[in-house]
Length: 307
Ligand SMILES: NC(=O)c1ccc[n+]([C@@H]2O[C@H](COP(=O)([O-])OP(=O)(O)OC[C@H]3O[C@@H](n4cnc5c(N)ncnc54)[C@H](OP(=O)(O)O)[C@@H]3O)[C@@H](O)[C@H]2O)c1
Image (cartoon, rainbow, N blue to C red; front, side, top):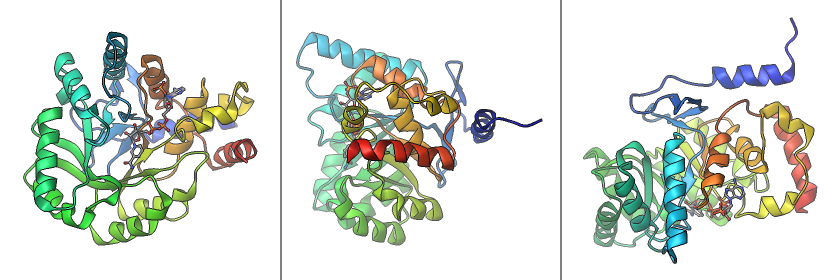
């Protein structure tokens, strides 16, 4: 029997689902998610998270309801990874309150950040994050944009040893910081890096993503849509025929599947405050993923639209 590419892709995606630790079911809410394994801990996560840069305010009861609805939808559908920072206005307070009100703090995998220049300021900043987000541990603490990184990493390592952080890492969204990031990946026992990578911004694939895979470092991907630039590039174009190979029913799913189909542990964290977008993005964590040939086809499709 000869399998079609579509059948092969489906078979490959199913085979990629790994063993799962307690608390992180492979079938969440009866949905079969594709899971990624964190190399340093063996913990498994659905391959799409949520970014919380825009959870500020809220500025109206309507916006408050939208924030709550988005978080409730994300959780109900089995989403896990939540990324925030004390630098995103009052986002930590907003989502901390939401998680408490909805009673879902312990069921989510919470990542936040620190970016202070002194040890004491860093400690104060991180204690503030615990007050705002709640819980007795964070799943990931990251040094934001490498600011104060050599000063903060020893505290992060010590608190990881005490069980206050499950994983530690560093973030950037600027390719000028890539050489420094690469040096840190060689010199520190990082569980995670976070960087910018998308179908329209592929610089991280040159050295950093292969290095992360080599060193067993998991990757969270920020700006997976280039802050919306990819949606502007495709405009109202219908989905090309090849998107049926990966069961994509929206452009967001195309962009997210491109990211996490990179080899290694690569998890995009699209930012959204809309319930239907949270559901759309999580849908990208299901079904077949592009193979090398289809990834190239996707790149050839998007490049002229961004030129
Ligand atoms: N250096 C760093 O550490 C760093 C830097 C930047 C970002 N980050 C993290 O990465 C996360 C993601 O980055 P980002 O939020 O700036 O940019 P992004 O994820 O590339 O794009 C967000 C934009 O896409 C829209 N969107 C989301 N889902 C969509 C869907 N399914 N269909 C159509 N539009 C959709 C959002 O609008 P709606 O809200 O209307 O859905 C928003 O305008 C941030 O939230 C943050 O957690 C970290």
